[in-house]
Length: 318
Image 1 (cartoon, rainbow, N blue to C red):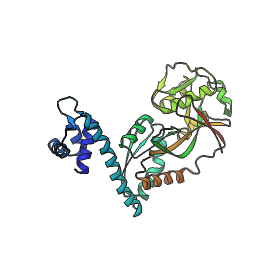
Image 2 (tube, rainbow, N blue to C red):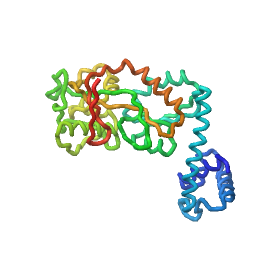
Image 3 (tube, rainbow, N blue to C red):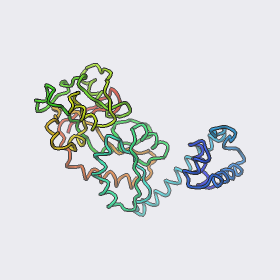
């Protein structure tokens, strides 16, 4: 029994197809099949039912896969312990980032990080919160950058920064003339929001709950802040942006930015990872890099942290 055989087995169990698993392993399908057959012969039992499409695990196969996952995790942990002891920061590192965070945060830290840690082979995916958490749990991501708190049993959250919300208000709306706006200024009939699947949508809907206004069904939904800003410019309403997205707008649009009175609504952005404690040296290096770069970006006063989970609110004063 070898680690590579167990890895092949886990891929077949995941994709339910020998050819797909072989492609993911960068080996031929016969090579992968032979290794799994040898594993089955050594164990004296069938792991997969090859007569079904898709390929399914046998009952004993399910138990074997569960144990194999633990073995692979412990094997990775041993390699990680040795690397940390040697002070080595390198190897493949898979990171998932929210779509509402990626465009503004990634350009700020990526170049610095890869120059400082050239031996880290960082692979980045843009993913929703649910997909980040699932891939971390499945072992397909080492860490993620997401809005928190998520309060998942198997995931640790390490705060990176608190990002205030900013209103984008066109001149056609009555509160455009206000220097600052309040949550009570928000009118749901004016508000343009992201479509379902974006956690920032929940942030905004939670603001409505704070305001004790009923959330109506919106006719206008979008997958990106740029579209929401353009719709607001066209006189179709106003929107709410995270601070980094707001200040990244062209200078001529900054007159439409309206900051909230304190306690200002904000979101917590964290580096999240599995509780298995793997690749901690890279996670620590990444967190340190991002925190150092952003330490002077946010001058926080009294803020309310708006949860990415619907109908949740926590307060944080600084």
